[in-house]
Length: 113
Length: 114
Image 1 (cartoon, rainbow over the protein chains, first blue to last red):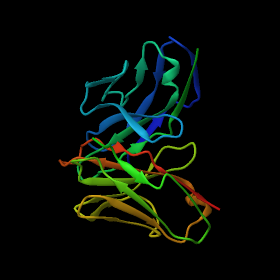
Image 2 (image 1 turned 30 degrees about the horizontal axis):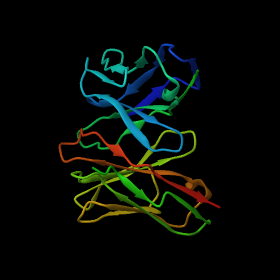
Image 3 (image 1 turned 45 degrees about the vertical axis):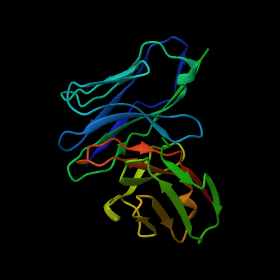
Image 4 (image 1 turned 60 degrees about the horizontal axis):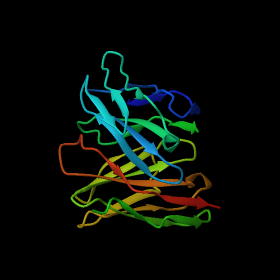
């Protein structure tokens, strides 16, 4: 079945540091891949997505590239801010007759000033 | 344009009781999915409703049931509550299309079972 593996957290960085959160997946067919962000006490917000191999999703300085050969979708940001502190979830949707999102366990990011 | 809305925001119940959670999708969306997020975990898919029918179900017992109304809003019902049902319940809506559409989430309902 479908599964998503994210790097274990928590991740603590200083402001302006480089961020990478690793995500690998197992899926049938050709899934769409997503990163969602959850701020404290809130629901999930879509951060970025990619729907086919070699697509790059980007938003708010965050980027992730859909790598079919390594089944990965790592999240990166060149310079994090305190306001980026949140939990980040990698997710996939394999499509066809499978309509659900399958999530990783989440990675807590804390950015210190 | 209002996003996905959920009610109530918080709820406290006791074991054995029943609960109903409500969700209104984003304007223009016709599909509603429900997820359970336990503390410190990723969301787990409960089921999805489309055209007032349950289209897909995750690994949840029959105590979890739902409904979708003609205006696309949805309810999640949980019977015979257990302590382990304490979680954040998230509703997500998606627009019409072939199944690869992005799901947009509401703020969630936090349920505590005592």
